Image 1: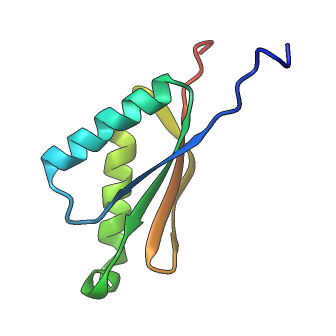
Image 2: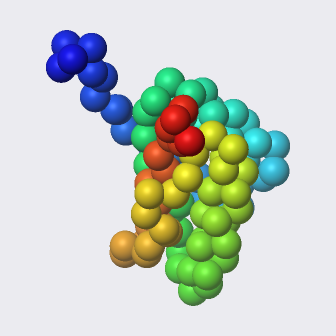
Length: 97
């Protein structure tokens, strides 16, 4: 049983609050592939310069991303601000559900 088990890798996807819709969809397709393979996703949204003045915009972007991949995965941790970065973990939805 142990030999057949697979450790989940953590794949990282980075973006900024100004990421365009097309790029956003492209990153969502990558996330779909990673989640189908059974990997976790670490979403990182980097705030730079004046963007740090409106951190709520970053949180909205992270929640939008979570909603975009909710068919294949669900947030393990909600977005949280650490320094100038928003972090969120998304885990794949198990096939048993």
